[in-house]
Image (cartoon, rainbow, N blue to C red; front, side, top):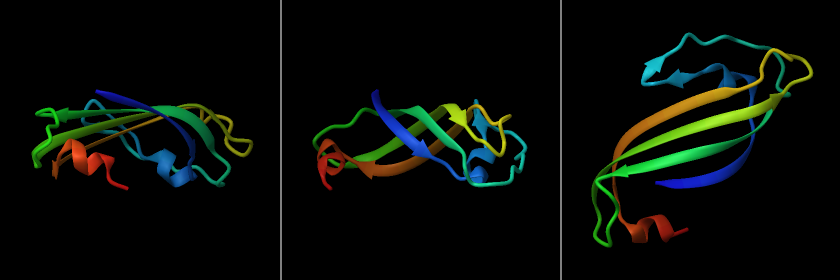
Length: 96
């Protein structure tokens, strides 16, 4: 498991889409584009990465908090989840 600290400037549209526990929640539209969040990203690989490229399941979970928006103070956090299958190795992650 890899944890990367990210600083995110999110548009209101991107923040409006949330996925939690594999279930899509309804999008709530918010106006304005002044949503700014800090957050973390957790990435898991199954099976784990090796030096040889092979298909792996990648699961990314991003937690955005705290969020600040002057035009929409009710927006305080966000969560996105992404799952995909792709061909990876330790080497391909290290390439720019």
